[in-house]
Length: 240
Image 1: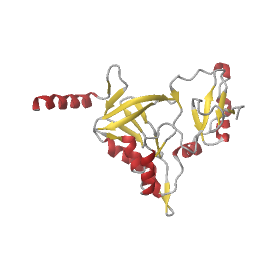
Image 2 (image 1 turned 90 degrees about the vertical axis):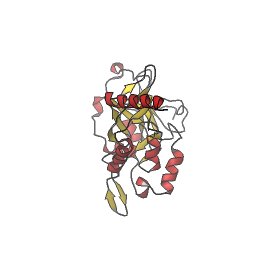
Image 3 (image 1 turned 180 degrees about the horizontal axis):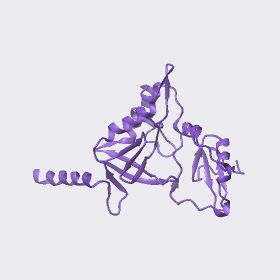
Image 4 (image 1 turned 180 degrees about the vertical axis):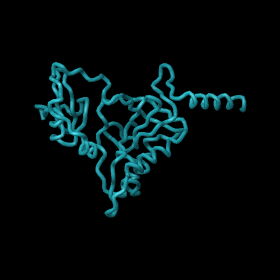
């Protein structure tokens, strides 16, 4: 047994020492993580957004019994505790419009996204996967983390605190580059389910949940309100 285990341990140590790595022909990335916030890490030069969840933003606050507390910092701290100095292994699923790799990540056998939701520091995103929905329900029932307070859903917080950008900065339709085929908007919460899509003719159109083409529309962005979608340069789909 020693003859088998010793090389495996040395290989793991060598992988950590050499930094992030990806196996040839695979979508797996591994290395020590630098934590950005409760759902974003970096492995070397690769920024990774956890698949299927949305954590409160680092600067976000929550309120419990009239007391305001930095729940976003707590979420970031939880992520740091989960990753530590151990090897994080991520399986890439997609790339979002910000150039981040969207991935499921583990430390040993622990699904990091699941741990964040289970402890009440992130919400599940059933638009993308239902695998964390039950864990969110348990966190709510146990009043864990953010569920022991009042708070804005992370997507709503981002929308309310996004820096204003002049409407005129949007380029003409003829000058716009087509988005990458695998591009996907930053994850939306259930309260921010309006889909913004770039048509083949260069039009920016938004679709409301329940309308004719909503389920088959690939979203470049999600919005919390029609006003937000229009402010970003989208028009309502004519079939809505």
